[in-house]
Amino acid sequence: MASTAYYGILQAGLPEDLYVAELVHGVSWTAAVLSDGRCGVAMHTTGETVPRMFGSLIGLPLNQAGQAMLSWNMEEASEAFAAVNAFYNHPGCGYVEPETRTLAGIEVRGRTVGMVGMMIGHSNMTQEDFLSAKKLYVMDREEKAGALPDSASEFYLPLCDLVIITGSAAINKTMPRLLELSRNAEVILTGPTVSCCPALRELGIHRLSGRVITECDAMLKAIVEKRTSVNRFALPFQC
Image 1 (cartoon, rainbow, N blue to C red):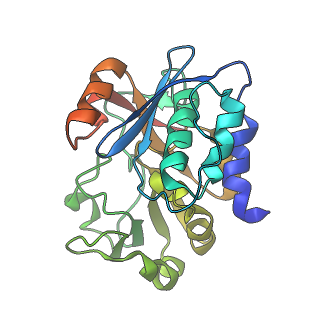
Image 2 (spheres, one colour):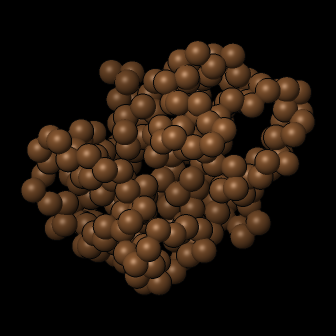
């Protein structure tokens, strides 16, 4: 099904010889460590109104744990994406440099821009980056100043020629619909939940912009203690 293509592409690349060794649940982030030491994160998304797909992802082969990306238990889906990102987001993936910017080389002037997830001030984007845009529509699931409710995506994304989507939309399963609504736009996925899997570009995504965790132990400790950005424990990538 087209609606599961995003998840199927990620699942297809997962190996069976790695397993999930550790999961850490933080205030804002969920982290996973694989058996080879790789570390990944995903937005901690709440919601356990339905049973888990697996009792626990710890100890499961990665290609089995990855199936939980499609779990409607959002806690479990967050864990699955953290594990999947531990595999895909590593120092050798894509273009990994300290100064890599989400909008590098992207023309904003005169364009109608849609942003799903309030990311101004995050992902190396500032308000100044959008001053030359013809129009900027920001939509967010949470109530945030200056943002429309995320349901406004149905109305405004088809009007946009540049769309920036938070990677966490994959966890709550809105990603397929957002991509469909943005099919006539240049699409960028950004944030620590984005997976550095170039095959995702087959879905009309023009840029994947996320994070590679480089200080795993420090990050694991920090996310448990308080609500914090993981960017200071990571390097940005593009692919």
